[in-house]
Length: 544
Image 1 (cartoon, rainbow, N blue to C red):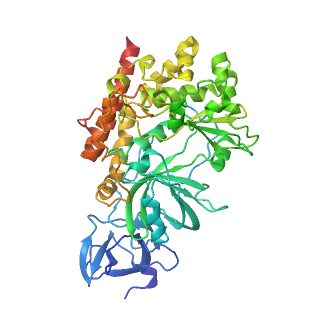
Image 2: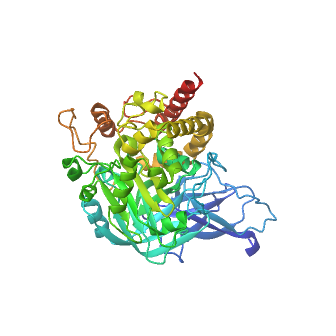
Image 3: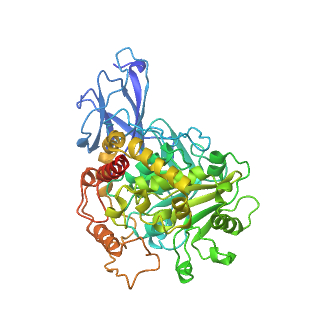
């Protein structure tokens, strides 16, 4: 007979078939299984708990139907410090069929000190993949997914299950997020917790689908690189997402640049205005305008949907502050009104890591924040990086920062290029990043560890049904230079854009090849291949 002192609690997150049960196996003894039940103290039905003897060596979970085992975990789990005299009485929250392969995930070294004070961020725990379970009216979810082009918001409940904790929230606002991401079969989401509620200090979150990136790694590496460069940005971690009784897949979890985030990062009790650069809109293209920070004496020219006021902040003056800042670029006084280092570091990283959907390349996916000490550049939406592109890869990999696509056509980067002192500073940062950050010797250990961390979940994600339709994949349009959509401008290459659409339609690049290989596409090369070529080209040119 087992005494209470010999028992411990077991908890596992599992998405099991109807009419099935789950049990824990102690020390490989399948003749004495210990059934688990739905946790009674939480809303999510994905969590199972129960008591069983403390293992001498190992434990694992099995799924059963009618008393017969239908699925086993591929390997066993151990409990650190487990012994016959151990006083440990509970496990962490395990996830069925995901036995951790590594204890530690390598981190990128800090290249530059932070421009602004950084607070500990417990939302993104190294080496852990949390679970998010969204529950609510299924008709609401169906409407959200079917009417993907509309700005629909629905109310749901959310359960967050980490390795060591559970947090649950009601009255959570859920919406689809992004622009082109709405055209994908795997959709991205925006999450807003109710007023006063926080998940590790955060109220606004995004679930990034990673739908265009077969490596699943580019956003992870990009945000970690931005952090390592001392720039203000969200951090990044992976989460498994479920909606009601449906597994949705592996997502990236990031923070949203709203008032709470701005307060935390910049220390402003009352936040100021935050502008978002959105490249081109149909209206701005009709007016020959884009979000390139070009000065225009007509204030209305800033309000053609190429920019967006993301946060109004105090003393909101619409686009007046942005117009005034762009005029300082023309006047040559912008350095007196900006955090210059934030622009230099951002543009250097854009060059070295191949941000092909950012300020220089597309006048897109960035923010400028009117900080009390000067405008700050903030990078965002970083999936088109590290070898995923609609630019010409050969032009991105010359090793000469002065030839990076778009650098000489955007007002801010052109000013830096034409100013000898600033150009030298930019070149120095490009060289430092190529040798000390975006370098295969630095990044390979991180890539290898994260690859092993998410490998099982990538395979799981790829076989799941999607909530949307892949409208990019069904687009068979061939772009030519005489008939381009409004958002396609140099340095985008129409034939590379065609190749991107073909690749999305084929969906035939495997996980390993996307990370370590050289896929047969002009819009994609392997993550490690890009890092190696970029670093080598820059350092070789610098040594001559």
